Image (cartoon, rainbow, N blue to C red; front, side, top):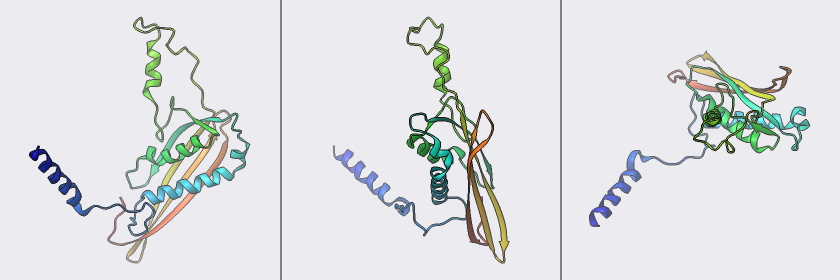
Length: 200
């Protein structure tokens, strides 16, 4: 028992002191990088959604007849390695919670993800090991009527000994039947960093 207590004390001391780590506010301006950080993603998401909610397109959608939307391709046209699904995740959550959109996971582009179990569950048809009364019948998937797509771009300019980095977030919703653009929003974020800083 003493050995267990001693081990626990040592472990707590290790995790409490290692690296001097501490929590910071996600809104903190004290630690700003030349790249894209959590604050940038939150800002782009918030401003995009505010624009969407004010649009005629959004206002015309009723809660009784929500639109089914598929997450299409999101292009990373920067020098930074970005998880595009992480960028779209916040937008997808808000669209779902708005009550006016339903997100399909039966199909997606590079900006989203599909649930492999949706297709796999249908392989149980005509499999004698499964009770066929419990197997999903054909024709039950809901087709998407809209697609969510976008792009993250970057431009780097040298200003004296400093670097100016301009990012843009472009997000749009398209009608899959007509191919017409229904709503779009571009958010610009600009930063200045010292010449010694690198953007990657």
